[in-house]
Amino acid sequence: MRKLCQLLSVLFFIYWGCEEEIPITCISTDNEGVEKVELWVNGVSTGVTDETETYSLEWNTITYDDGSYGITVRSYDTSGNTTDSEPITLVVYKTVELGGEYYSIETTELDLSYSGLTGSIPPEIGNFTNLTYLGLSYNNLTGEIPESICDLNINWSHSGYFTISNNKLCPPYPSCIEDYVGEQDTSDCP
Image (cartoon, rainbow, N blue to C red):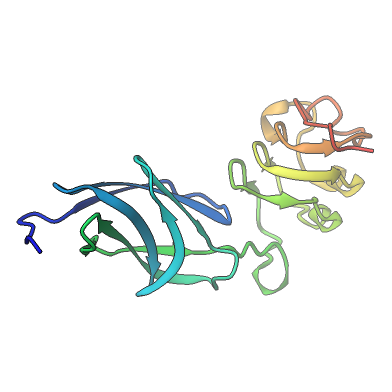
């Protein structure tokens, strides 16, 4: 078997968001050809592979606890040789606490726009009585908006203090925000 002087080079381009699946795109080259690339986390194969350029791997973090993880991409060439990329560390932090010991009555601004949030807005949102700004736009929030949102200390006469557009929230909307809901995907609403 012929030895390769420069077996493989792998570069990472990573997009990190508050999502359950993290896309990892890499470039892998070899003078004999690349068969596939495979995602490894903390030295263990995830079984996630891709065989076509540009190589894109989806790391599903749903089964991982919050913490730091070493991410490596293993590249396989057409002769059966492998090379691992330099490891990088990614931090998984999926917990958003809005209550309990992390709750602060002093919270005045909360911007969770573009955070990949899913599910419904809990009625407890109204407990943040000192909130003067709330941003929830560009998520995947579903269901109806609870009336308790009107209990917030937001200047409802000015749209700059509250954003909730580009979700999947269903009417009817509470009267305090009906002019500010913006565009919603209501295709799954009853």
